[in-house]
Length: 211
Image (cartoon, rainbow, N blue to C red):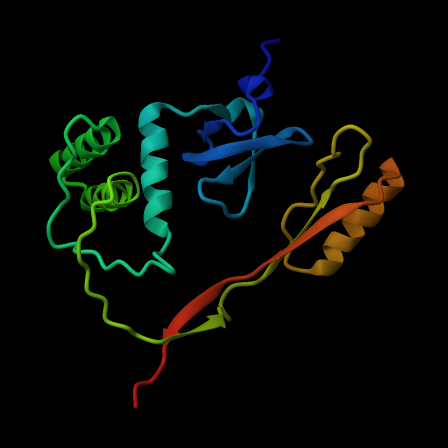
């Protein structure tokens, strides 16, 4: 039997999960599954080992662009001008790669990917080349409220073990009682007693009424 490639991947490697068509950071094993985490942080997910392979340079670039575009410029006092696409800096390979990705997206009429590439290129130039342009924001106050249409999720991971964590997981549940029952059963079967529990819910931002 051929060993799944996921069993040969080092922790921290960027991989592609063909079962979900997503790129993630390999975090280790959770029972029979590979644990992956989205780029930039977020909720981990389990993938079948046979569905995991190292991500290609193009897949890593696309995932990095999307992760960067999903983060806000919280705490950044420098305004940015998004009216003019940024030009690559001569003799800079990251600039060239992002500009090539943008040109390819434009040729495919993929406006979302083109915008993502521009965002990442601006951030790279601001960080590595100290290129600063202007952007005008209109402040709109928002309230953050729990989304009443989505159920929260509860989950537990077993972190018992002498040399390595057990890494068994309950999987997400809508009811915390189901997770506690899984913990009791797992402890009875393994004598493991230490768990990392997590709670996740969904939030929406609603504009505050203007007086």
